[in-house]
Image 1: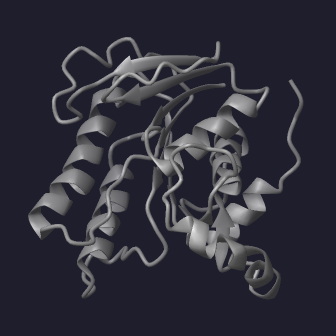
Image 2 (image 1 turned 135 degrees about the horizontal axis):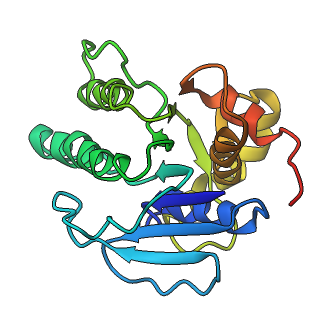
Length: 223
């Protein structure tokens, strides 16, 4: 399995990358970052893309990959609407269009969020924008598009990009998970689910909290 992963300088991307590195079926990982991170793993090849709006020829070497796990994203909190649309819709679509030509059988996986508005008509701006991204990705001609809508994400212990505020709330994850098993996901389970989608697919393109938990627990083949 050959994967392209974006957003690895953030918490979610770092967690997904960790699961890809640990999976014996994943043989090659192209990590697309704005700035060098110098990963010390033989599977990982870093591709530096300073501007995701102007890809030029920098992505031309990414050919015949199996999937793109698109983990790049921004929070809408405190951000002007037009800037959020540019960094969420325009950036994602530009990147997707840049890689599809050399990867005709690519599976594209987009991390959206619980509450995303597929109708694009609701009252919540970020949810409408995410819904438009989902809908338009599915029109581009990828082999498969999966849009993952996780809820609260419990961080993976030991990783470097975990947001500081998680240290104040992570204690609640285990007891609440026992009471409401489908209210949240662990970051590890999100990564496992994304890899499993490449491996075996799923019955629908919108992957909710419960679906992520199901996919993460499926038995894995050994290399």
